[in-house]
Image 1 (cartoon, rainbow, N blue to C red):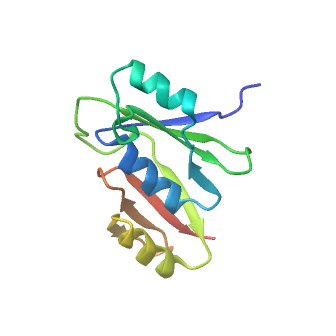
Image 2: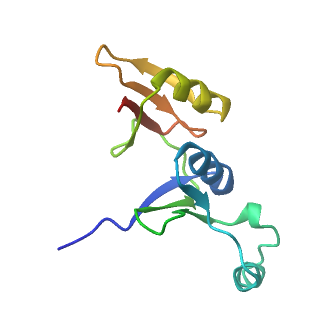
Length: 129
């Protein structure tokens, strides 16, 4: 039986998008860089972790899917084929927080859910809990 391990998001700015999602999701963080990882990146010619081509966002508890934000050359062209849904007890408060992180509202629905976009225009839904 398969289990969901990782969700990979192609993007232009992995570090910025990883920080956005780490702030958006309760209990998640950008994985810390240890000396070995910094050295591995340097070996690839990457001197600043902000230029890391694949940034990991992980659950602090170790339970749940990880998110990888991976550098790709092409831009997003159309609607995502797969998107994430998040839920909250306070939709309006969460929408305001997401906008303060750089997200933007795209569409509201009568059932209370709202389609949002992250920093690179990737759609996701905020659902009432």
